[in-house]
Length: 257
Ligand code: BJW
Image (cartoon, rainbow, N blue to C red):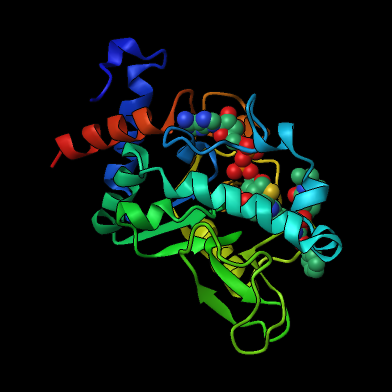
C-alpha cells in the first residue's frame, strides 16, 4: 500500500517537481545500490546492520582473500545466496521495471548482485558488480548461470577443466567490465535525468556516474534516507525509502497520462 503524502516528511512539491522532470524527459538513467533491496530483506553493506559492520571486506571480497581461502569466501557467498533466494522484489524494483517500458531511453545501472531487478521484470540491466547467481572459471574465464542453493561442492570446480570457480562479482581492487562501464558512463552523460537510489555513493567508479551526469547538465535526483557525498551535487534529495518514494513519483507521473 502506498503511504499518503502527509505521512512522508518530504515536501510534496519536490515529488511533483521530480514527476514533472520525468514527464518532459526522454532519456532517463537510474543507478541503484543495496538500499533498494533493503526493503526486500537483503542487508546493505555500510548501514547499522550492514555486512561490512559484521565482516571484513579484506577477508571476503578481494582477489587476495579468495586466493588465501576460497572455501571461506565461498561459504560467505553461499550464505548470502541463501538470504537472497528467500526474498522477493519490492515496489521500488517494480516501478523501475515499468519505467523501462515507459521511457524511450531508459538505463538501469545497478551495483547490486542479487538479481532482484530482473526478477521484478527489468530486462536491460547493466550489472556493474556482477551477479551472485553466476559463476566464473578462474582458468578459462567462462561465465555460467548457477542457481543452486546450497551449492553441492564448496569451493565449486569448473565442470570442463576442474579449476576453481569463483563468484561472478567484482571485488575491491578489481576492474569493472569495461564495456559495461563505458556504456554506463555514456548513458549517464547523455541522459536528462539521473536517479541515484539506495547507494552510499562511496564506491568508485560507480559513484562517479551521477557526477558525470551532473557535469553533462542532467538533473540528478537522490533517493536515500540518509545524506551521502552525492547529496550536495543533487538537484533533488528525496529522503526516505526507495520502496515508498519511487511508487509515489510513479503515481504522480502516471496521473498526467
Ligand atoms: C536505502 C534504504 C532504502 C538503506 N531505500 N536507500 C577513488 C577513491 C578512493 C578509492 C577508490 C577510487 N576509485 C576506486 C577506488 C577503490 C575502490 C573504492 O571505491 N573504494 C572506496 C570504498 C573507498 N573501488 C574498487 O576497488 C573498484 N575497482 C576499481 O576501482 O578497479 C580499478 C582497477 C582498474 C584496473 C585494474 C585494476 C583495478 C571495485 C569496487 C567493487 C565493489 N564491490 C562490492 C562487493 C560486490 C560483490 C558482493 O556483493 O559481494 O560491491 S563492495 C560493496 O559496495 C558492493 C556494492 O555494490 C558497493 C556499493 O555499496 P552500496 O550499494 O552503495 O551499499 P552501502 O551499504 O554502502 O549503502 C547503502 C545505502 O542505501 C545507504 O546510503 C543507505 O542510507 C541507503 N538505504 N535503506 C533507499 N530502503
